[in-house]
Image (cartoon, rainbow, N blue to C red; front, top):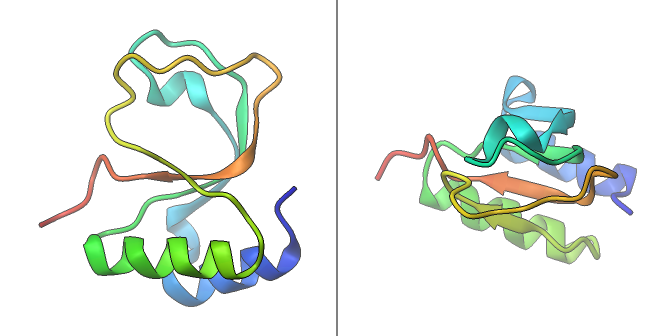
Length: 91
């Protein structure tokens, strides 16, 4: 489960508009299936991604990093993890 501490840590790293709550995974996979991710963050670059992952792990969360969502299947029940989406990252 993602704690309030993780959410606060995320807000220190990524702007609030780049953190989504209960985001349907079907919008982020090529197969268009999957329930909601409890939290999803969209880092803008590699350094922000590293900070996100370190903060999440430091709070006991297990982040799941995805890219374009190709060949990913998520359950209809959703994902109770922090999903870090790298699709829109710059180099």
